[in-house]
Image 1 (cartoon, rainbow, N blue to C red):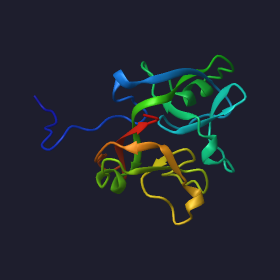
Image 2: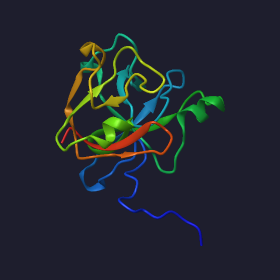
Image 3: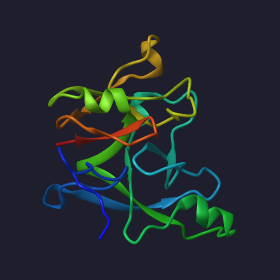
Image 4: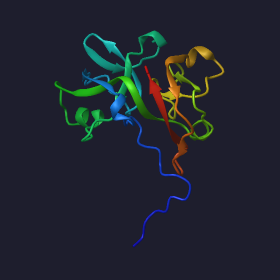
Length: 172
């Protein structure tokens, strides 16, 4: 029977997945069907009564939590594609442990207690607005420190993707 052998460690997780359920404060939120999150595990903000992705010009003080990957999964992009105009809900991590995607070099070099930064300006395809990174940009205002978050230890790499996963503690 064919399969994978994990020689050193199993994969850490999936971006946006809660990693420790016993230490979790998640809140159901209304998502905006126009301002759509590109992926789970991104920082978001409040816009009226809706939880939305960060936008250019936002600041670290606007961050109100991290979008959690629900189970069963319901992609916000899929719901928007289907034309659903209201009642789109999600979950916001207010306090807990979560797996997030970061560049693979940062994930594998991560150390317990390291700082976490949020991209609030100069987005790229591999680091959209609201993404968490472990190394700030040369322009510090692009990726200010998220003081409520700390790295929980070394992460892993996703073969061929240039991304890795790391577990962070948020608001603990």
